[in-house]
Image (cartoon, rainbow, N blue to C red):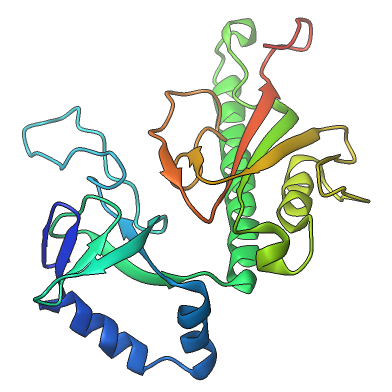
Length: 249
């Protein structure tokens, strides 16, 4: 964004935001134009302010670093101004990354699969780092495990997902159960159990609370800032971080 204030995106790359949208729309194929017509036009914002991070200051060594721009806070475009501005459902500022987005079943499947793979990768790298620390000679009994064993998951999905988006039930829950415990033999639309016993429950909602992207899969740490999302599936994982000789925590 090259000009923005409050929740108004005035310019994208030096041109009025509406003009930029029209230029993008002219390049779309018929299928993509149909997605805009039937699913509505959304936007994604990736920025310190939108995601709850303070703008970086040169003299602030404790400032929370801004996240990479591969995760976007998705919001609706709720209006158009007289000068071609776009009014969006989030506070924005100059320098924010901005994308036009639409709802698409195929992309939604792929995105959830990617998020699960990213979470698995983060856990693997965390386990490797923990192993390096153990080999350095620190007393194992003084360490708190960085990798918990998943016991259960709580899934909250937007009412606009499910059968209405995918044309069949259980798409999100099947992918999540695969993430929780490996190959899934069968899943009921109301929940299920993965092969290694990790359970999954949840419900549909009109607004889902969670972080942007993934958080916490490399072990216990300070909670990430949460947002009320739309058109999203949010998963919270309950894990056992206790040592083998003690009860679950």
